Length: 376
Image (cartoon, rainbow, N blue to C red; front, side):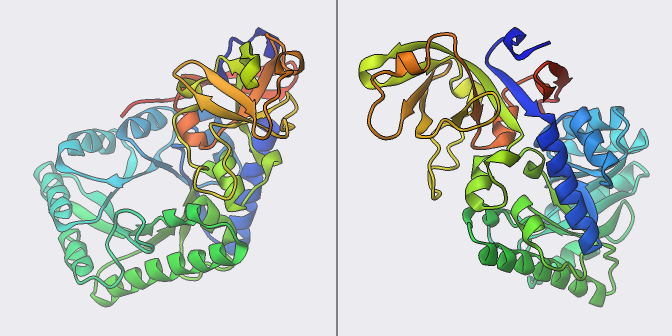
């Protein structure tokens, strides 16, 4: 298969770039002396997860129970379901455990902790549960100093549940863009999660695992004393948001959308593409960052950006490519109908989610189709 034979729009993986990204992260984790548990929600693809495992990753992180079921069926046994557990989902978690999956759950409130323990005890199963810690006010979790941390830990320390550790995710790192700021947040993330673990241990509770991570803080961390593992996901492909954060450059971006020019609005300086928001996603994560890439950065086949152009607008199936300065009234000559381009996405996770499969590209004529998972 060649690029010309692929129907557009299509999601392309630049395999050499992806492998360099995997090797870079794993080498950094190895140097810091911690285990690495990649978050496979970014790719939801067995081929990608196997490459991460082959490089040295231990276990995986998932964002849905369907991911857990599908990756377990594909031979991944050590799985962290890193979304707060609720009682209604426990039967599916039980089925995974009973099938032999080493599944870890997370909670951040007493009600869920009690529900897990009660359900496990009722069915003769002991669930390993980690407590989510809020170290940056970004999303969910228990603050490291909150009294309820100990109450939750005690609810998990008995019949039906076992307290396995603590974890945190410094999602606010996506809002930063300097090395010093990222390093400071990485230390805040580490220190807060370690402190929570120490409080649990001082209360006589077990806390073997201290898990931290986001792509920016993982790469910015200078030491990880007290941490046992790191999680990160988008690093495997990177994207324009991560480029603005400063943890990669355009040459690291391994996911793109292959698209075709299907028409023009010459008076407006527009080229119309067959990749709209159904192909790129509606994610406009760069809009509040230092450089707004619209719905994506157009590039040539070798990944070189078309300087001055961006995907400025998107309807469901139509993308609008334009010069961000003066309108290019000769755009029909510069980008004739039938021209094929690559569009780098704002958010690799969201763009990948628009497709049932990737086209993994190792060379001009070396392309494989890699299926991906979807659903909840």
